[in-house]
Amino acid sequence: MKLLFDATELSYYLDKSGHRAGVFFVALNLFRELRKNNELVLVCNFKRYYFLKKIIDDVDEFKGLKLLEEHSIINKFWAWLNYAVRNSNRKIIYGVLSISRYYENLFYIKNKKNKETLREFRIYFAPFTPPSKEIDDSDLIRVRMIHDAIPIIEDKNCLKNPRLWSWKVYNSINDKDFYITNSERTRQDVLKYFPQVKPENIKTTYLGVNESFKQTEKTSEFKYVFSLCTLGKRKNVIFAIKNFFEFIKRYKINDLYLVLAGGVWKKFERELYQTIGEFDKSKIILKGYVKDEELPELYSNALMFIYPSLYEGFGLPVLEAMKCGCPVITSNTSSLPEVIGDAGIQINPENDEELIGAYHKMYFDTFYRELCAERGLIRAKKFSWQNCASELLEFLKEKDV
Image (cartoon, rainbow, N blue to C red; front, top):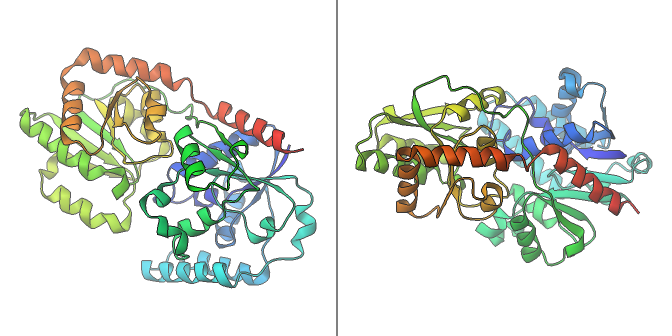
Protein backbone atom coordinates (compact mmCIF):
# COMPACT_ATOMS: atom_id res chain seq x y z
CA MET A 1 0.00 0.00 0.00
CA LYS A 2 1.19 3.52 -0.81
CA LEU A 3 0.47 5.62 2.24
CA LEU A 4 0.83 9.31 3.06
CA PHE A 5 2.07 9.17 6.66
CA ASP A 6 1.86 12.26 8.87
CA ALA A 7 5.22 12.32 10.66
CA THR A 8 4.73 15.53 12.66
CA GLU A 9 5.20 13.64 15.93
CA LEU A 10 8.38 12.02 14.58
CA SER A 11 9.90 15.49 14.18
CA TYR A 12 10.59 15.30 17.95
CA TYR A 13 12.88 12.30 17.41
CA LEU A 14 15.98 14.20 18.59
CA ASP A 15 14.24 15.95 21.50
CA LYS A 16 14.71 15.18 25.18
CA SER A 17 11.50 16.74 26.43
CA GLY A 18 7.90 15.99 27.32
CA HIS A 19 7.11 15.80 23.59
CA ARG A 20 9.04 12.53 23.38
CA ALA A 21 6.41 10.62 25.32
CA GLY A 22 3.44 8.33 24.66
CA VAL A 23 2.09 9.79 21.41
CA PHE A 24 5.59 10.07 19.97
CA PHE A 25 6.35 6.40 20.64
CA VAL A 26 3.03 5.32 19.14
CA ALA A 27 3.89 7.23 15.96
CA LEU A 28 7.44 5.84 15.88
CA ASN A 29 6.46 2.22 16.34
CA LEU A 30 3.62 2.35 13.83
CA PHE A 31 5.98 4.02 11.36
CA ARG A 32 8.49 1.18 11.82
CA GLU A 33 5.85 -1.53 11.36
CA LEU A 34 4.01 0.07 8.45
CA ARG A 35 7.12 0.75 6.39
CA LYS A 36 8.11 -2.96 6.40
CA ASN A 37 5.68 -3.88 3.62
CA ASN A 38 4.28 -0.55 2.49
CA GLU A 39 5.52 2.53 0.65
CA LEU A 40 5.46 5.49 3.04
CA VAL A 41 5.78 9.11 2.00
CA LEU A 42 6.06 11.54 4.91
CA VAL A 43 4.24 14.80 5.47
CA CYS A 44 4.15 17.08 8.51
CA ASN A 45 2.74 20.26 10.00
CA PHE A 46 4.48 23.27 8.46
CA LYS A 47 5.94 24.40 11.83
CA ARG A 48 7.90 21.15 12.14
CA TYR A 49 9.01 20.88 8.50
CA TYR A 50 12.72 21.68 9.00
CA PHE A 51 12.95 19.60 12.17
CA LEU A 52 11.73 16.55 10.25
CA LYS A 53 13.91 17.37 7.25
CA LYS A 54 17.00 17.31 9.48
CA ILE A 55 15.99 13.92 10.89
CA ILE A 56 15.56 12.49 7.38
CA ASP A 57 19.01 13.82 6.47
CA ASP A 58 20.83 12.71 9.64
CA VAL A 59 19.10 9.68 11.19
CA ASP A 60 19.82 6.32 9.54
CA GLU A 61 16.36 4.78 9.80
CA PHE A 62 14.82 7.81 8.03
CA LYS A 63 17.36 8.24 5.25
CA GLY A 64 15.96 7.78 1.75
CA LEU A 65 12.39 8.59 2.75
CA LYS A 66 10.51 11.20 0.77
CA LEU A 67 9.13 14.26 2.57
CA LEU A 68 6.19 15.77 0.71
CA GLU A 69 6.75 19.41 -0.22
CA GLU A 70 3.24 20.58 0.53
CA HIS A 71 3.98 23.98 2.05
CA SER A 72 3.92 27.40 0.40
CA ILE A 73 6.99 29.65 0.49
CA ILE A 74 5.47 31.88 3.18
CA ASN A 75 4.56 28.89 5.33
CA LYS A 76 8.12 27.64 4.95
CA PHE A 77 9.39 30.97 6.23
CA TRP A 78 7.46 30.43 9.46
CA ALA A 79 8.74 26.86 9.55
CA TRP A 80 12.32 28.13 9.22
CA LEU A 81 11.73 30.70 12.00
CA ASN A 82 10.48 27.97 14.34
CA TYR A 83 13.58 25.94 13.54
CA ALA A 84 16.00 28.86 13.79
CA VAL A 85 15.01 29.82 17.36
CA ARG A 86 15.20 26.25 18.72
CA ASN A 87 18.27 27.03 20.87
CA SER A 88 17.11 30.49 21.98
CA ASN A 89 15.85 31.29 25.46
CA ARG A 90 12.44 30.00 26.43
CA LYS A 91 10.62 33.34 26.05
CA ILE A 92 11.72 33.72 22.44
CA ILE A 93 10.75 30.13 21.60
CA TYR A 94 7.29 30.48 23.16
CA GLY A 95 6.83 33.85 21.50
CA VAL A 96 7.54 32.48 18.03
CA LEU A 97 5.37 29.42 18.68
CA SER A 98 2.47 31.62 19.79
CA ILE A 99 2.77 33.82 16.70
CA SER A 100 2.98 30.73 14.48
CA ARG A 101 -0.17 29.30 16.01
CA TYR A 102 -1.98 32.60 15.45
CA TYR A 103 -0.67 32.64 11.88
CA GLU A 104 -1.78 29.05 11.27
CA ASN A 105 -5.31 29.69 12.50
CA LEU A 106 -5.89 32.95 10.60
CA PHE A 107 -3.38 33.53 7.81
CA TYR A 108 -2.18 30.12 6.66
CA ILE A 109 -1.62 30.13 2.89
CA LYS A 110 -2.52 26.99 0.96
CA ASN A 111 -0.13 25.61 -1.60
CA LYS A 112 -2.41 25.19 -4.63
CA LYS A 113 0.32 23.48 -6.66
CA ASN A 114 0.16 20.55 -4.29
CA LYS A 115 -3.20 19.24 -5.48
CA GLU A 116 -1.63 17.25 -8.31
CA THR A 117 0.92 15.67 -5.96
CA LEU A 118 -1.77 14.62 -3.49
CA ARG A 119 -3.65 12.80 -6.26
CA GLU A 120 -0.85 10.21 -6.23
CA PHE A 121 -2.24 8.93 -2.92
CA ARG A 122 -5.46 7.32 -1.81
CA ILE A 123 -4.99 7.24 1.96
CA TYR A 124 -3.60 9.67 4.51
CA PHE A 125 -2.83 8.38 8.00
CA ALA A 126 -1.96 10.53 11.02
CA PRO A 127 -0.90 8.98 14.35
CA PHE A 128 -2.15 12.17 16.01
CA THR A 129 -1.80 15.50 14.17
CA PRO A 130 -4.86 16.99 12.40
CA PRO A 131 -4.44 17.20 8.61
CA SER A 132 -3.18 20.38 6.94
CA LYS A 133 -5.59 22.53 4.97
CA GLU A 134 -4.17 21.14 1.70
CA ILE A 135 -4.97 17.60 2.78
CA ASP A 136 -8.34 18.70 4.12
CA ASP A 137 -9.23 20.01 0.66
CA SER A 138 -8.08 16.85 -1.12
CA ASP A 139 -9.98 13.69 -2.03
CA LEU A 140 -7.79 11.56 0.23
CA ILE A 141 -9.33 9.02 2.57
CA ARG A 142 -8.24 10.41 5.94
CA VAL A 143 -7.60 8.16 8.93
CA ARG A 144 -6.39 9.57 12.24
CA MET A 145 -5.65 8.27 15.72
CA ILE A 146 -7.44 9.85 18.68
CA HIS A 147 -5.48 8.94 21.80
CA ASP A 148 -7.86 10.31 24.42
CA ALA A 149 -10.50 12.93 25.17
CA ILE A 150 -8.69 14.38 28.19
CA PRO A 151 -8.92 18.11 27.30
CA ILE A 152 -12.67 17.79 26.62
CA ILE A 153 -13.28 15.91 29.87
CA GLU A 154 -11.29 18.45 31.89
CA ASP A 155 -12.66 21.58 30.18
CA LYS A 156 -15.21 21.62 27.36
CA ASN A 157 -14.32 25.27 26.73
CA CYS A 158 -11.03 24.11 25.20
CA LEU A 159 -12.95 23.81 21.92
CA LYS A 160 -13.39 27.59 21.91
CA ASN A 161 -9.81 28.67 22.60
CA PRO A 162 -7.60 28.74 19.45
CA ARG A 163 -4.50 29.31 21.59
CA LEU A 164 -4.66 25.79 23.00
CA TRP A 165 -2.99 22.87 21.21
CA SER A 166 -6.21 20.87 21.64
CA TRP A 167 -8.35 23.41 19.77
CA LYS A 168 -7.43 22.19 16.29
CA VAL A 169 -7.12 18.52 17.31
CA TYR A 170 -10.71 18.25 18.47
CA ASN A 171 -12.40 20.85 16.27
CA SER A 172 -11.18 18.94 13.21
CA ILE A 173 -13.12 15.80 14.16
CA ASN A 174 -15.93 15.36 11.64
CA ASP A 175 -18.47 12.92 10.21
CA LYS A 176 -16.48 12.04 7.06
CA ASP A 177 -13.07 10.96 8.31
CA PHE A 178 -12.12 7.67 9.96
CA TYR A 179 -10.60 7.25 13.40
CA ILE A 180 -8.51 4.77 15.35
CA THR A 181 -8.55 4.74 19.15
CA ASN A 182 -6.10 2.83 21.34
CA SER A 183 -8.66 1.66 23.89
CA GLU A 184 -12.37 0.93 24.03
CA ARG A 185 -12.76 3.61 26.71
CA THR A 186 -11.34 6.25 24.36
CA ARG A 187 -13.62 5.03 21.58
CA GLN A 188 -16.66 5.44 23.82
CA ASP A 189 -15.47 8.91 24.89
CA VAL A 190 -15.09 10.04 21.28
CA LEU A 191 -18.60 8.82 20.43
CA LYS A 192 -19.95 10.58 23.52
CA TYR A 193 -18.30 13.96 23.03
CA PHE A 194 -18.36 13.96 19.22
CA PRO A 195 -21.75 12.52 18.19
CA GLN A 196 -21.05 13.46 14.57
CA VAL A 197 -18.61 10.52 14.36
CA LYS A 198 -20.33 7.43 12.97
CA PRO A 199 -19.75 4.25 15.04
CA GLU A 200 -18.70 2.38 11.89
CA ASN A 201 -16.02 5.02 11.22
CA ILE A 202 -14.12 4.42 14.45
CA LYS A 203 -12.19 1.34 15.53
CA THR A 204 -10.25 0.32 18.65
CA THR A 205 -6.75 -1.03 18.06
CA TYR A 206 -4.65 -1.75 21.15
CA LEU A 207 -1.07 -0.53 21.19
CA GLY A 208 2.02 -2.70 21.46
CA VAL A 209 5.29 -2.75 23.34
CA ASN A 210 8.80 -2.81 21.92
CA GLU A 211 10.76 -6.06 21.94
CA SER A 212 13.56 -4.18 23.71
CA PHE A 213 11.36 -4.17 26.80
CA LYS A 214 12.09 -7.50 28.44
CA GLN A 215 12.93 -8.78 31.87
CA THR A 216 16.62 -8.41 32.70
CA GLU A 217 18.65 -10.01 35.45
CA LYS A 218 18.42 -8.10 38.71
CA THR A 219 21.68 -6.26 39.18
CA SER A 220 20.94 -4.29 42.36
CA GLU A 221 19.79 -4.91 45.93
CA PHE A 222 18.65 -1.30 46.07
CA LYS A 223 14.89 -1.34 46.84
CA TYR A 224 12.76 1.20 45.03
CA VAL A 225 9.30 1.99 43.74
CA PHE A 226 9.58 3.12 40.11
CA SER A 227 7.38 5.63 38.29
CA LEU A 228 7.74 6.74 34.67
CA CYS A 229 5.61 9.48 33.15
CA THR A 230 5.71 13.02 31.92
CA LEU A 231 5.62 14.76 35.28
CA GLY A 232 2.41 16.77 35.16
CA LYS A 233 -0.76 17.21 37.19
CA ARG A 234 -2.89 14.61 35.41
CA LYS A 235 -0.32 11.91 36.08
CA ASN A 236 -1.12 12.28 39.80
CA VAL A 237 2.54 12.21 40.85
CA ILE A 238 1.90 14.28 44.00
CA PHE A 239 -0.59 11.63 45.15
CA ALA A 240 2.03 8.90 44.63
CA ILE A 241 4.73 10.87 46.49
CA LYS A 242 2.65 11.82 49.55
CA ASN A 243 1.31 8.32 50.06
CA PHE A 244 4.74 6.77 49.54
CA PHE A 245 6.03 8.82 52.47
CA GLU A 246 2.94 8.05 54.55
CA PHE A 247 3.49 4.33 53.86
CA ILE A 248 7.18 4.23 54.88
CA LYS A 249 6.42 6.38 57.94
CA ARG A 250 3.46 4.26 59.09
CA TYR A 251 5.34 0.97 58.78
CA LYS A 252 8.77 2.32 59.79
CA ILE A 253 10.47 1.32 56.52
CA ASN A 254 13.98 2.62 55.99
CA ASP A 255 15.20 0.67 52.96
CA LEU A 256 12.75 1.81 50.26
CA TYR A 257 13.11 4.70 47.79
CA LEU A 258 10.92 6.35 45.17
CA VAL A 259 12.47 6.76 41.70
CA LEU A 260 10.68 9.20 39.39
CA ALA A 261 11.61 9.27 35.70
CA GLY A 262 10.33 11.51 32.92
CA GLY A 263 10.48 15.12 31.82
CA VAL A 264 8.78 17.79 33.93
CA TRP A 265 6.21 20.11 32.37
CA LYS A 266 7.32 23.66 33.16
CA LYS A 267 4.02 24.80 34.71
CA PHE A 268 4.07 21.79 37.09
CA GLU A 269 7.71 22.14 38.12
CA ARG A 270 7.19 24.47 41.10
CA GLU A 271 4.43 22.33 42.65
CA LEU A 272 6.52 19.17 42.24
CA TYR A 273 9.64 20.56 43.88
CA GLN A 274 7.63 22.22 46.63
CA THR A 275 6.03 18.86 47.45
CA ILE A 276 9.36 17.04 47.45
CA GLY A 277 10.75 19.74 49.75
CA GLU A 278 8.18 18.80 52.41
CA PHE A 279 9.66 15.31 52.78
CA ASP A 280 12.99 13.54 53.15
CA LYS A 281 14.65 14.35 49.84
CA SER A 282 17.12 11.49 50.26
CA LYS A 283 14.23 9.06 49.68
CA ILE A 284 13.33 10.48 46.25
CA ILE A 285 15.47 10.12 43.14
CA LEU A 286 14.57 12.27 40.15
CA LYS A 287 16.00 10.61 37.04
CA GLY A 288 14.64 13.11 34.54
CA TYR A 289 14.56 12.01 30.92
CA VAL A 290 15.70 8.38 30.59
CA LYS A 291 16.94 6.84 27.33
CA ASP A 292 14.83 3.99 25.94
CA GLU A 293 17.63 1.47 26.28
CA GLU A 294 17.99 2.19 30.03
CA LEU A 295 14.33 1.59 30.89
CA PRO A 296 14.19 -2.26 30.90
CA GLU A 297 16.82 -2.39 33.65
CA LEU A 298 14.98 0.24 35.70
CA TYR A 299 11.71 -1.67 35.39
CA SER A 300 13.29 -5.07 36.06
CA ASN A 301 15.13 -4.00 39.21
CA ALA A 302 12.18 -2.16 40.74
CA LEU A 303 10.24 -3.71 43.59
CA MET A 304 7.07 -2.36 42.01
CA PHE A 305 5.84 0.17 39.42
CA ILE A 306 3.36 2.90 40.32
CA TYR A 307 1.16 4.65 37.75
CA PRO A 308 -1.81 6.38 39.46
CA SER A 309 -2.84 8.57 36.51
CA LEU A 310 -6.25 10.21 36.72
CA TYR A 311 -7.01 9.50 33.07
CA GLU A 312 -5.21 7.68 30.25
CA GLY A 313 -6.06 6.93 26.65
CA PHE A 314 -3.98 3.77 27.00
CA GLY A 315 -1.03 3.87 29.42
CA LEU A 316 2.08 2.50 27.68
CA PRO A 317 4.33 2.51 30.79
CA VAL A 318 2.01 0.01 32.47
CA LEU A 319 2.46 -2.36 29.53
CA GLU A 320 6.23 -1.80 29.47
CA ALA A 321 6.48 -2.58 33.18
CA MET A 322 4.52 -5.83 32.76
CA LYS A 323 6.72 -6.83 29.82
CA CYS A 324 9.77 -6.42 32.09
CA GLY A 325 8.26 -8.51 34.90
CA CYS A 326 7.68 -5.57 37.21
CA PRO A 327 4.58 -5.76 39.48
CA VAL A 328 2.22 -2.85 38.80
CA ILE A 329 -0.03 -0.60 40.87
CA THR A 330 -2.24 1.56 38.67
CA SER A 331 -5.58 3.35 38.60
CA ASN A 332 -8.94 1.68 38.13
CA THR A 333 -10.06 4.50 35.85
CA SER A 334 -10.29 5.18 32.11
CA SER A 335 -8.41 2.71 29.89
CA LEU A 336 -5.97 1.37 32.49
CA PRO A 337 -8.08 -1.67 33.50
CA GLU A 338 -8.09 -2.70 29.81
CA VAL A 339 -4.30 -2.79 29.86
CA ILE A 340 -3.54 -4.37 33.23
CA GLY A 341 -6.43 -6.82 33.55
CA ASP A 342 -5.81 -9.05 36.60
CA ALA A 343 -2.03 -8.68 36.40
CA GLY A 344 -1.62 -6.11 39.19
CA ILE A 345 -3.39 -3.91 41.72
CA GLN A 346 -5.98 -1.38 40.60
CA ILE A 347 -6.72 1.52 42.97
CA ASN A 348 -8.92 4.58 43.14
CA PRO A 349 -6.41 7.32 42.20
CA GLU A 350 -7.97 9.70 44.72
CA ASN A 351 -8.10 7.34 47.71
CA ASP A 352 -5.02 7.58 49.94
CA GLU A 353 -5.74 4.42 51.92
CA GLU A 354 -6.14 2.30 48.78
CA LEU A 355 -2.71 3.33 47.54
CA ILE A 356 -1.08 2.85 50.95
CA GLY A 357 -2.73 -0.59 51.10
CA ALA A 358 -1.38 -1.43 47.63
CA TYR A 359 2.14 -0.33 48.63
CA HIS A 360 1.80 -2.53 51.73
CA LYS A 361 0.61 -5.59 49.78
CA MET A 362 3.39 -5.33 47.21
CA TYR A 363 6.12 -4.66 49.77
CA PHE A 364 5.31 -7.28 52.40
CA ASP A 365 3.71 -10.10 50.37
CA THR A 366 6.55 -11.58 48.32
CA PHE A 367 4.39 -14.38 46.90
CA TYR A 368 1.74 -11.95 45.66
CA ARG A 369 4.37 -9.63 44.20
CA GLU A 370 5.92 -12.48 42.23
CA LEU A 371 2.45 -13.64 41.13
CA CYS A 372 1.71 -10.15 39.73
CA ALA A 373 5.05 -10.15 37.92
CA GLU A 374 4.27 -13.54 36.32
CA ARG A 375 0.74 -12.52 35.35
CA GLY A 376 2.11 -9.31 33.86
CA LEU A 377 4.56 -11.20 31.64
CA ILE A 378 1.73 -13.40 30.35
CA ARG A 379 -0.67 -10.50 29.75
CA ALA A 380 1.92 -8.37 27.97
CA LYS A 381 2.16 -11.03 25.24
CA LYS A 382 -1.34 -10.04 24.10
CA PHE A 383 -0.08 -6.62 22.98
CA SER A 384 2.29 -6.09 20.05
CA TRP A 385 3.04 -3.40 17.50
CA GLN A 386 2.76 -6.00 14.77
CA ASN A 387 -0.84 -6.74 15.77
CA CYS A 388 -1.58 -3.02 16.10
CA ALA A 389 -0.22 -2.27 12.61
CA SER A 390 -1.99 -5.29 11.08
CA GLU A 391 -5.36 -4.22 12.48
CA LEU A 392 -4.74 -0.66 11.32
CA LEU A 393 -3.89 -1.83 7.78
CA GLU A 394 -6.98 -4.01 7.69
CA PHE A 395 -9.08 -0.96 8.65
CA LEU A 396 -7.36 1.17 5.99
CA LYS A 397 -7.98 -1.43 3.29
CA GLU A 398 -11.64 -1.65 4.28
CA LYS A 399 -12.00 2.09 3.74
CA ASP A 400 -10.04 2.16 0.47
CA VAL A 401 -13.04 1.39 -1.73
